[in-house]
Length: 154
Image (cartoon, rainbow, N blue to C red):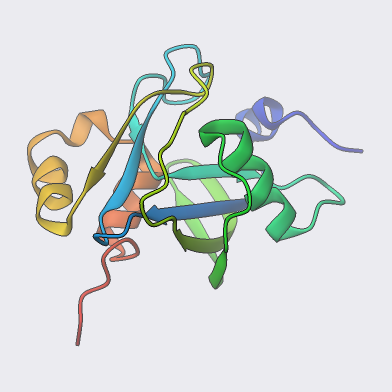
């Protein structure tokens, strides 16, 4: 039986999720501000796109679905990065991470999902994290702290 995601979150069950990191031609990362009507983290800044994967849904299909639903983006060349289990906030997530560079394509986010969006470079992202941590979703905070968005070169 498939449960609604709200029930899964309430019961703190593990979720299969897809995260998509979008970059523009300058290499800046797309932040989205979640719509105020969202059940989880309304009005907070988040990674480019994220969704839970349906019971029979392929991972890349889930990534394509969320890009179309939230950002009205289709025909995006997705690059699989990795999969890993993470504890974020009170949730256990099985994350599959994708990235895409959309060049200079313009965005028309779905206002039911996204109230604002902004491209940032690494310095701007870390400044945002330092000065406005209460405005960031737990997923975005995790991605920044784990060096997922702008990996540090070693």
